[in-house]
Image (cartoon, rainbow over all chains, first blue to last red; front, side):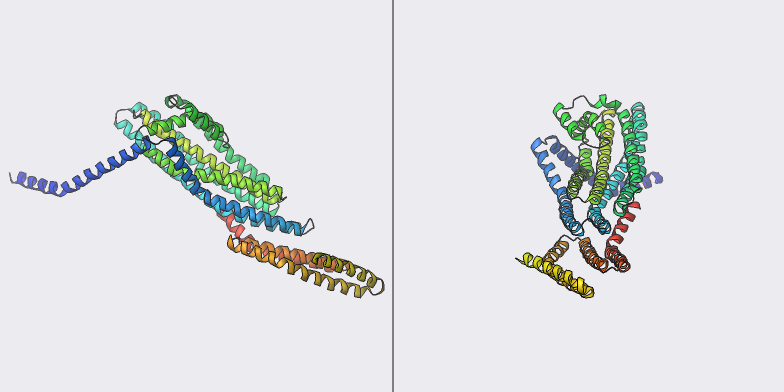
Length: 350
Length: 126
């Protein structure tokens, strides 16, 4: 009897202690759900004008740094052309060309290095997201009595998505870094053998990415699950934009239906948070990659027009690297969108 | 007007040097040296606003490599002049020495840039 009394008193004390925390948690959960509903409602009612306005803001925000780099590169190239004109085609042109190539590389390398770091960080975040998210969701599916769907989902994405993420972070990105270093050293030093070696590394990085995109293309055999209601105009626009991306452009173009349908599934469900997360994660870096790529190509064209051959080769090499980064970002974007959309569809959330 | 004056100065110097070389070759060389110094001084006077403009751009846009480029270009130009002078005087060995010294000076001017390039390459390879 005494034991029961002690237990009862202990339970009462425990309840008194935990009740405020429980009420607080309940309030927090309610406010979180309300907030989530608000965001969800905002995203559901997002019209084309607002979306374009937001996109314009995002692009404007990312435009400043690449435009500054382009302006500096143009000013430097004009001055270099003047200096090369003074040096003329004499025997002094060789050491002058080396100095000019080094200066051109130096002026554009800092923002490109920062961009490469950002791309690496984003890919790493993505890799962590996939590595944590896929097994967790598989566990939830199994606990909810859907072992078949869990097996398909985990078998497909735990192996494919995680493997590709690891291959890209561990192999393709380091190859790209070595390519950029070797290419710049070859152009500055005027070494004949190095550009071939550098191009070999670039081709290897492209090859790795194209192999992985083939694997993803195989996985996208599941696109029939997603591609039901994709808007034909949006699909055409998506194919038009993705067709120009190197390496994964054709894959992105053919998977545009799945990605658009995936985005639609996410927009129509609780995946609105995923859309926001993806936009925050990929949007700025992808836009910056694109603008830097265009800027570097423009600077390379100007360099060619001013007969600064080494500068042109350096800028083209950097542009190739940035375009490959862009391809990496598009690949990961597709991977994450399709993984998240498939999770919602297989879980019955769509 | 200044350019016409300069070209006139060069033409007169050319005639003077051609005359001197026939009778006193040593004085011819001295005349060439004097004319070269005067011409370089005048050219530097014209180029000074350009150098100041480049310096202002360099500090405005934080282009640290531009100073090295201008220094290297100046060294290349001066070395070329002195080298040709040595060749005109028939001193080929001296011309080679001047060439070597000029290249060393360009390397020294480009040293900070090369160090920074090396740092960037190391960061890429890390």
